[in-house]
Image (tube, rainbow, N blue to C red; front, side, top):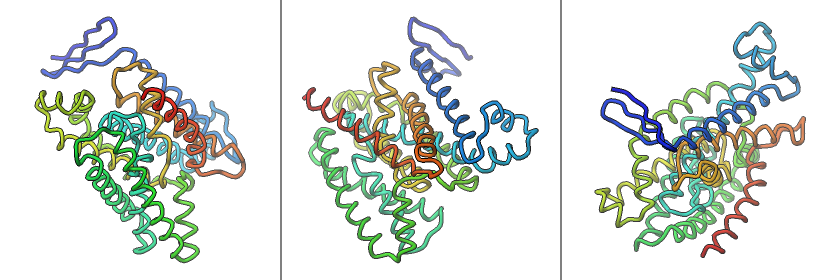
Amino acid sequence: MTGIDFGRSVMVVRSRGVSARVGVRTLVVCAVLLGAALVVAVLSLGTGDYAIAPDRVLRALFVGDQRFDRLVVWQWRLPRVILALALGAALGVSGAILQSVTRNPLGSPDIVGFNTGAYTGALIVILTFGGGQPQTAAGALIGGLGAALAIQSLAFRHSVTGLRLIIVGIGVSAMLASVNAWLILRADLPAAMSAAAWGAGSLNGLSWPQVGPALVILGGLTLVLIPAAGRLRVLELGDDLARAFGIRVGRARLQLIVLSVALTAVATAITGPIAFVALAAPQLGRRLARTPSTALAPAAAMGALLLVTCDWVAQRAFAPTALPVGVVTVSIGGLYLAYLLVAEARRS
């Protein structure tokens, strides 16, 4: 039996004995954000040395009567746009998970150090073992998990607040950043230049061979995340209340942190570390949707919009030179981080 009930501001979906409550405003906000992301995606598909008008982009996507337009859109530009949308959504969800676990808006993979740990693992594979894309992805995942375990063991030893995790994460991130610099300095010049450019976070040069594996892995992580997402809101209420609801807090927190690291590692393995998106997307999505806690769907939609927009700006800001998207996200993210720090200081 399947049904949908509309309340004043909440929609309840029931199917085969399972029900879910979804805010109507949340659905509207997600739809608007995704629509805006698709508009920017169409503009990005038409941007470049060979400019294509939006109507021709749509014809190339769905009709295909212009062979050269179809070649440019489908083979040269569409993989980059798809990965910008998918990886932006993954980073947004990763940040939302960590901010819910730590109950702190500064809880982000790039602030806490998961990004840096994933970068360390990927660098070791690239510079020491000369690994390809699958090996780099595995190295990024192992590095991110190692950083997460180290940070959690130091920060949650005495059931302290999420603020300590932020502070410990910044310290661990600084240590790992020095390790990354040492790895690059001891490498030969071509490998060091390639690793340093990759470390800026870039969608340049991505093609269809990276799209399939990324979507498959992200799809698998999403299937694992769906049943675990219900614990996020309970964990935000505090450890005592979570235990009262029958949740094994330590196990649930570790599982969610692993999922956050895995989502970050996928993005890092493909593009290099991209800052700001995981930090800002959850809070921006939450404020637009006006949800009482950090919601995953608005965070994913906002993350997709932020990354595809920043990548479009990176392509056009100094055209014909295309900047790494990480340069744009860091420039904007610095201002946002300063705002968050001031807001947290006033709240305290």
